[in-house]
Length: 606
Image 1 (cartoon, helix red, strand yellow):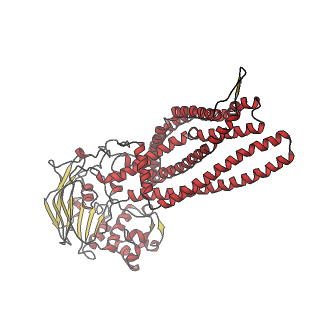
Image 2 (cartoon, one colour; image 1 turned 180 degrees about the vertical axis):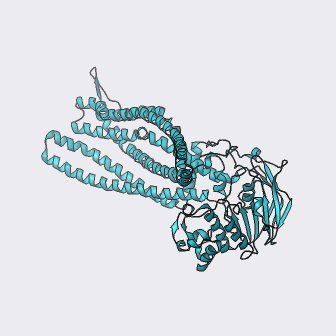
Image 3 (cartoon, helix red, strand yellow; image 1 turned 30 degrees about the vertical axis):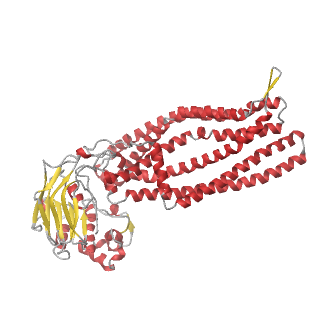
């Protein structure tokens, strides 16, 4: 994704670290309305996992009589132990199914909570607009809300349940293994040496050494995973952009150019994946080697007791089973280090994004603010209005401007003079600058951008946006389309499509003015939308403001050639060399602020 020329590169590094971000996410979860549901699920998981650990103890104890029956060739004892095994295994099967069900339900509930919260924060008043122009943290929010949130929930649930299970198994079996260690001793130079908890210490040393080596070798994977997700998001955005504009690319014959651009986006992804392959391979030497040696490690450790006659075959297998349970619980860190690194990287991305959404309202907090005040008088007024941008400050050619209902004002600005920021300032999206904007209270105001927005769904809903279609009479939609010259779309009023792809740019612009006919606002602010219309459609639109919308005030930012006697007054948007710019007031929490022509796409109904 390209960044405006004067926007410095951003970073996601926060002043606080991973621990603070983890605590922030936990507090958000604790404050959620679904807190009691999560507590109930956590309790149920603890019960099921605890019952499973108890079943594992019973299964391990079953090893002793079963293998002793085999050693004695006791058929009746052997068959009896098979029946005992069937009972224990049936109970464990039920518990395993219950655990899987609780696992999946927990993922569902957490995914719903986290995604909804991120969407609500992202689409708070003005936040999405400001975040999109706040540097790298605002790039590809769809990736963070969709893919990163999903991945974080799945990893958190799986790792959390795995850690709980390992902890309970360790607590359950470490006592058993300690007791069983009493039967193991060494005969050395005629002396019998017994080490209290010998098998427990062996398991701790074995798992501790493997965990330390895993951390040393696998630690770089955390940063590599974080970098990979960022690169993947850039590639996906590039692919979506090409898909969305494939018609223009085909018309220009630009396939080769776009192909090269996509290859350039793909290369960093492949580079980081190669580094991940190397890192994961190095880690596998530790984890796989640890796993293979674990097959014989407990037998080797317990062998002195067996060969000295202190342990029978059944006793040996019981000790081996307990040792395996303890070392399996202790090796949780080893087995899951790669997933833990992935989880930490994903948590950092989601937590940083969430923190940015919370902090975005303080963007440029030290800069001057435009005062927007409600007015009981029926007029729109600008008093000494200046709009600050990173590199410049713009103002109207007149210090005090009053616009009354029915007036038609044209504002002319050269390209790059901050026209979009001025448009956004009136909409309340761009607060930086000085002066005052007085808005009439309780009167509908609409903003028509040069980039029309048509939400997915039926054409009827798109025309009524942002109000529900049911708020308008049935015939109003047909009348609006016929009046604006789009009668051909009447049969499609109740068809659902992606209208921004079905309709041409001129038709999309025309639908903005059909929307005006439905809402009949008292105030309309237009940013270059009139300039994008063809001559015939422009004539229809200008006639609308002379007939059906004669009482509507029009403030249009556009080119001089759009006048043709329609506008009663012309203002100029000019640079103020003595005005305050935004460059010196960048917030330390966010790397950059929008450029002069960041653009707005607002349709606001008060």
